[in-house]
Image 1: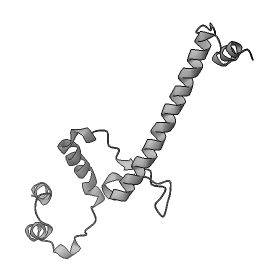
Image 2: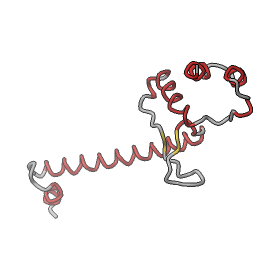
Image 3: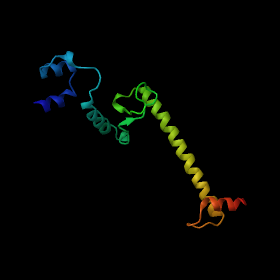
Image 4: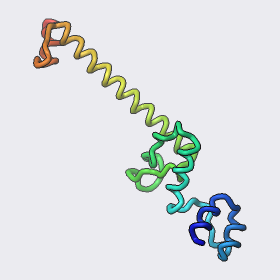
Length: 130
């Protein structure tokens, strides 16, 4: 019976669910309960396959409290998600800049005639005559 109530609890309004379960609705909270959170993420990912790569938590240094503790996606506000997008875009930009710099170093070394076992920095400097 408990499993059936847990399953239909996702579909019923809280007042009706608690009436069937024999509990008062006053014990319910408006915040999502941690035990239900994985179920919410599973449902979200099934509904939107483009969210398969959505992380379970995001860093949230802008929030008060423990700045190193990640914030569960289920508990994140729209603003939290927006700040996480900005931070993720900054990480992507930094990764692209690093990749571009590495590609440039590789190209400079190859243009200087370096082989696979040669040191890239030495070859690039040699190419520039330094």
